[in-house]
Image (cartoon, rainbow, N blue to C red; front, side, top):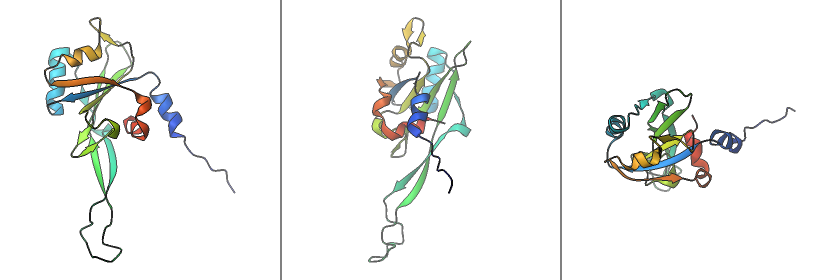
Length: 165
């Protein structure tokens, strides 16, 4: 009998998030307008990478449509695959990217512990500054941003794995 091998996701997550900072943003605009404002005001040109969009399958506890009472087919949970946009900005003279994720699609959230956030930024360096101020300061100055705050990666639970591409 062969030895069973399994991947420990907690070790993958710990290694992936080791040098990253997470920022959640509430904004009142669609992603394209948000990225356009970031480009025009801050000069960060985020590019969408469709091939890296986070595709998450959610189990929906809705009636299957068969709805035959008193049978096995009365309430069959269905699956729905939801695609959350992924954007990247490469920091000049660096191999480090700033990653931007859409956190909301329909009634679903990529990071369920932060449902109120519209966007999630993954910053490669907690000391990242632009014009001698932290990145979060500049985000808070954008007209479309209602609120932004640092998020504690340790409190996110299993949904943080949705950020690992």
